[in-house]
Image (cartoon, rainbow, N blue to C red; front, side, top):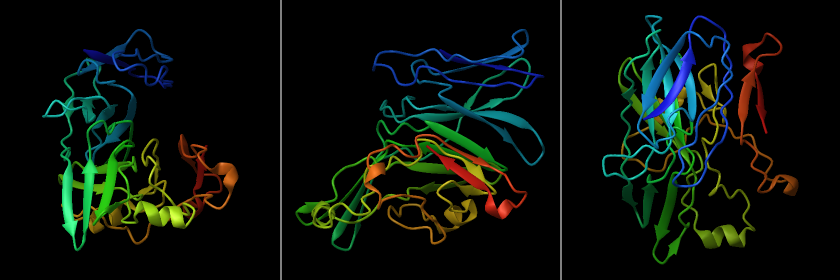
Length: 273
């Protein structure tokens, strides 16, 4: 079983080491632990990279839990889809439960176009973050394709995130880089605003109910319609430097964080590197 250790009754700092190793390797998770005597131990599926990401979750009754990402968890069909677990925050640890998400590939026909999502090896749980009742779990290697007659956008890792609202059981998906533009059109436009490989969700952060891409979670949930594969959140805004060749293929957004610097919640600072 994969295992993650968490201390209680003390401030603590986690620094995960050894990211993705070879296909057959299950890397250990190392942590700087300021309370090495009293530990809570949690386990997940063997080989799942359980503990790859984590965050605290606090419900409306002030009960605490830990959200744990395991991006190599096997799905029902024994394909590697990734998974997310909710673990009780207790001194004796406890059994972690898997959060349910729709992990099936999907195909939809809309007019003359066909849209496809591919969730095998999507890495669900590569990043997890919670805010109030919301848990956002991301799958940066989720693939997407759009086809029209003999043309296609090409199957690429646009990535995406799942939003879970535990109190009412609500679920939504968010994949801001999906598009129905064909590959030849990107080539004709010299790949201007080509987001086909953006791997959305490689890292994530929430501030005042917004994802770092600056789409309010309430709008993500309200605009989502199950079975609709291509939609846009009207209020979303991207932070990008697509006009500056210096940043092309630069992995900007590999890590992200938010901060409050001036006492004005409306100007919360954002950092991406």
